[in-house]
Length: 327
Ligand code: PBG
Image (cartoon, rainbow, N blue to C red):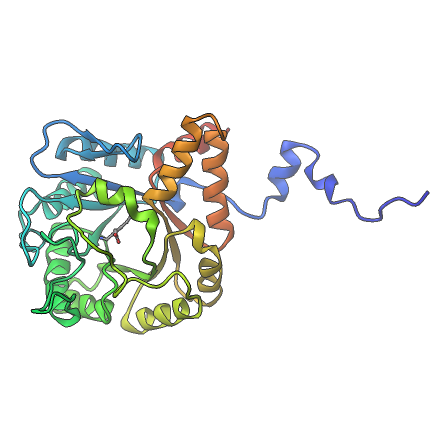
């Protein structure tokens, strides 16, 4: 009888052996927690389609940020939900607007112990829910939107954000944000470019999270799910415009894109495990159909394995807690 010459199973014989030979690691510093703060709330407001995630009050947001420091997370990404919306999203460029105030509060709480990131986009602030302003024909006006992004970026940098995340998929947004930051002497404020952001059905729960006013879709600015090569093009453009880090979003249905980007990017690569990815796993787990903790861990590990240096995930704090307790 001839025996197999090669036995990969040897490397799987015990937890210690598997730990020794693991090709991919998970660590709290690689995780970024997205967090929502809503103007005028007195108690945190649960988001139905994202069990376990809330719209924060300023106070509970500060506590979440302090916890993130305790856990050793890499960063927190802030989204604001204003009380009043209008056609041009003026709450986004108000230094006292909900997001800018939250940045200031969180920064005062965490100092430089945690990287504070903020969303540079208009969709939370406009009454039509689009990521930019509209022209007379009702189309999203790229270049008019860029001017507002520039103003938002400076407000957010002034409020103390370490990293800005332009997420609206307007052409030229990274260049405009970089230029505005430099002109305002915020040359050390970094840009995490939402470089390859796809129009995705999996953003559904986020729209509840930010009370989105959107009717229709974002297909004229976010990328088409059919396209792969185009992601590399988008990343190249953002790099040329001055991106310090680049992102692929969503994550789980776009691991090929993530792999391509990780292959060619000279700067750190992020992936955003979005609201619908969160909701799917939570829903299946709530039904007893999958093992929640194992599924969460596997999903984030898969995103790391595909090439993400850092992962934005709503499970960041919980996952970091598990990593800390050492399984
Ligand atoms: C746009 C933005 C969106 C998300 C993050 N930034 C929504 C969208 O493009 O519709 C989605 C995040 C998620 O689904 O978890 N500001």
